[in-house]
Image 1 (cartoon, one colour):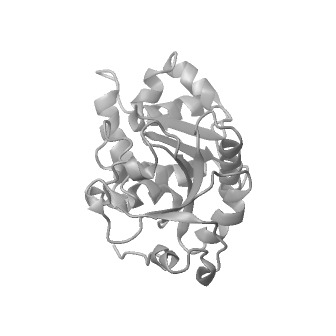
Image 2 (cartoon, one colour; image 1 turned 30 degrees about the horizontal axis):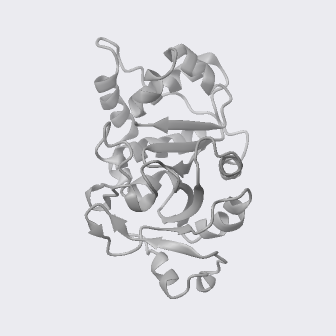
Length: 259
């Protein structure tokens, strides 16, 4: 797999990003991993907290350069991205994994004994542009700090939104899956089937926007099975799988926590 050029090193001598056609505020180039400095920056994040409109104003132009926007939480109890125990050197490539095989394997590990993997949920045609929905969800997170205390806009060199966790070697789901690229393969599949975009990351939390959420109880229950395999803690903390499925109906975002 050919590695895409990383535009971030240019920001070391050009912090505003003007040579890349960007107008960035003061920020931080991060190369910190759990095993020492990485050979190039893994991400850039703004020095000021995100405000509604930042995603569209800064993230959309950067995405055209292969710098995918994502909100990172600097107010997490575990600290900001410098403290996230990133392991890019131990992360594989999402395209090397089959999403259905990953889900089926994780289902066997998480579901009650005797329950058969029901197979992937069918996709839906988005009612809104997935990137527009991502901006809406990002603005909502920036405006309401209930989920993320200090969200800052970050830019990550990646092929697509679903690859962002793997691109930085994020270890948030480590107690469930040691190679986050396998979960990114599922995120790729959700991109294709439900218009999902990765919008926010904390130490062990992930938020995705959803442009084509389930519209019927049957669709929601099928997606709940995938969520159980992807992040069993979500279902564990719900009243029941059926109650969890009802929360997915029409939901514009999905929140995952591997605490």
